[in-house]
Image (tube, rainbow, N blue to C red; front, top):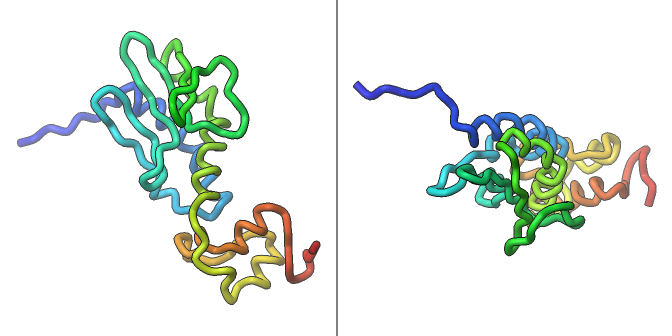
Amino acid sequence: MEQTSFLFTSEEEAFDLLRPGLIATLEANWADPAQLRFDRRKNYCSILYGSSVIARLSTGASPAVSVLKGKQPIPGSVENGNFCKLSLGDLSEAATYLPQMQEALQSILDRIPKEFSCCSRYQSCSDQKACVNPNRDMALRCAYRKVLHGGKVFFGTNRNV
């Protein structure tokens, strides 16, 4: 009989600390939190949304977090390709960089290509200033959702353009 371990590694514990903040970003964008995942590799672990890497956590003699580059440089980081690497005392310090991870996640969500301009719910979306489509995958591919996120409202009582 195979035994299952209930002990968490430090990478999983760090992910558990970061998860609520990342889910808040997903919910603000009406994105599916089930797409947020943790993937263990040989020398590091990745935090992903779908197939896009948000950050990497590495342990060993020198724990570190590498966050997908954002608009602003992260003080004290070393750029490494598309990531900014930061040394940590231990992985619990990764939560310090949650705002940068949320910015990286927002960047990933903003790059999802539009598939249509708007749906039949455009009036309700305008009134709520956010997408109200119950199908989260469809909502992420709506061009009007991105316009609303940018603060422009084309229809309804909140029209500002």
